[in-house]
Image 1 (tube, rainbow, N blue to C red):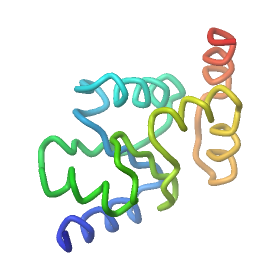
Image 2 (cartoon, one colour; image 1 turned 90 degrees about the horizontal axis):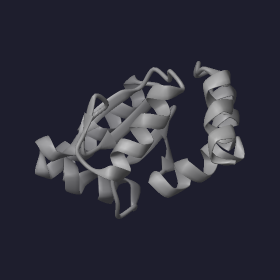
Image 3 (cartoon, rainbow, N blue to C red; image 1 turned 180 degrees about the vertical axis):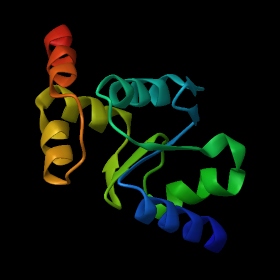
Image 4 (tube, rainbow, N blue to C red; image 1 turned 60 degrees about the vertical axis):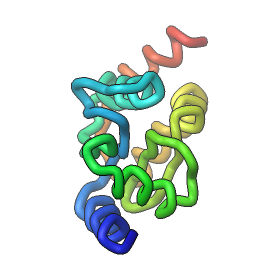
Length: 120
């Protein structure tokens, strides 16, 4: 776990937004990862994707690191935000916009509004 924990900490420290997911941002390999990556991609958020399927130690390590049992997991400025359900809820309520704005992370506000409009 130590190597995975170190790798995770270094990754979330080095990048403003990190999504630990199954697959990658251009080819997610599960529906939940696809949903979160789709939201971030559509909103033009600059984020780093980490494919947990490529490393079993990392796949288990991220669950222990965050004390969160599921993947995907989103981190903003080193802080764990949540998984698919939480990110979806935050997107629809506007909380995700606020979180990104407060942390100086750029995104397409019009795209975010379109997602809410389509799901309203």
